[in-house]
Each structure stands twice: as structure tokens, then as C-alpha cells.
Length: 248
Ligand code: 8X3
Image 1 (tube, rainbow, N blue to C red):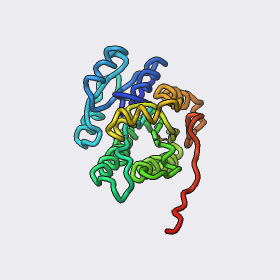
Image 2: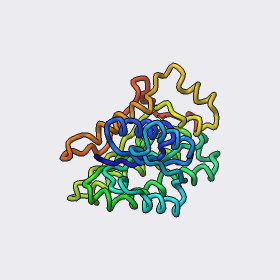
Image 3: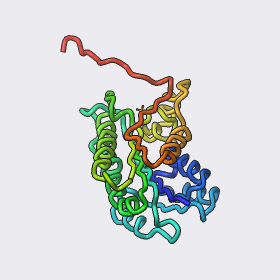
Image 4: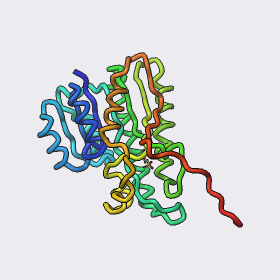
């Protein structure tokens, strides 16, 4: 039986990924900040199949304790799904809160590379895989996306760099770059469930389950094949043109 660790498992894509992998016969470790949500998930899935660890991924000591303290049966990791991450705010750079920026960098960049570094020995030993959650915001800038988009570009570029470093180890690395997915993402970003409802209303966005199934599909591909990066969008979302400030 294979083992996957999924960060940010308390909601959205992470929670759906835990369900998808457990349903497909994997042993899963789910991490996140909200212990009550992790407990409910473990009750549903079964504690022999899902081990949960509640901690703040930005806390270095907690990260190390979580990985170094994995119980028997959950220590040999075949797949790391780096899903924990967030967007905070939609303000322009000239108006954004610096604190929001540092929180995004601490979570989407620092905690992301730290978790990866901690799990690399196990992943190399098992010839495993790493699937990182980037975003279309990594490639397509939009006003208000500033630091969020930059952190997601980091995720993609670090994924490609890992491929290079892990050459010859058999470890596969993928950057998934989703567009609009209806999760708590927009409520957290804007601080408003109204704004979230308005954004998704009538848009037919992707669901956490859609992306979880994509992750499961990638994990199950033949081991001689690596998807480097994969952009996924709802059909209803596409690209807009450049903007021109006339008279500026
Ligand atoms: C966010 C994707 O399209 O909602 O990662 O900006 S989008």
C-alpha cells in the first residue's frame, strides 16, 4: 500500500485529495491547522487509513516534529502533495498590506520548500513523487495578484528545479496550475463570503474534487513518465488582453 502526505487537508483541494487517495486505496497523512476538521475527516475515513497532524505549517519546530514523529505504518512516504497555501487580499501593490505579503511568502514559499526538504529523503528512498499546487496566476498576471502570483511562479520554478536536482533518483515532480476552483480560497482572500459567492455565481468553476482527481491521475501514471507542469481551467474562464492607460 502506498502512502501520500497532503498538506492543507482541512478544506478544498486538500480535503478532496485526502478523500480521493484514501478511496483509491492509499494510506494518507493529512495536515492542516484546524484539528476539528482533521478529526472529522479521520473519523469518516478511518484512523488506520488516515493519520492527521494539526499544526501551523509556518511553524518550523511543528513542521519538523510532525515529519520526524510520523507513526509506524505512515513513515515511508511515496507522494507529497504540497497543497497548503493561500492568497490574501486583492489590493494593488501600492495599497496592499505588507503583513498579507509576508504571510503568503511564509506559507506558499518558505513552508513549501521546508516541507519538501524534510520529505526528500523518504521520497528518494521510495522513488516517489511530489505534486505541487501552483496556479494560473504563476503565468498570467492580473491586478491585485502581485505577491500571490509571484509565490505561485516560485512554486512552478522550484518544481522544475527539483526535477533537475532529482535527476536519476526516479522521483517525479509536477506543478499543477489551476484556474478558478470553488473552495474557501476566495473567502479567505477577500475576507467575505459574499464576494466569494459573487465570484463563483454562474461561473461553473472547477471543484476541489476536479483537481483531486487530476492529482490522483498524475500519481497513478506510469513511473517512467513525468508531467512537468499542467494548467487546468474551467471552460468558462479564459484570458483577457493587455491594459492601456491612455494619456499616462
Ligand atoms: C487562483 C486562480 O484563477 O482564481 O489560484 O486567480 S484564479
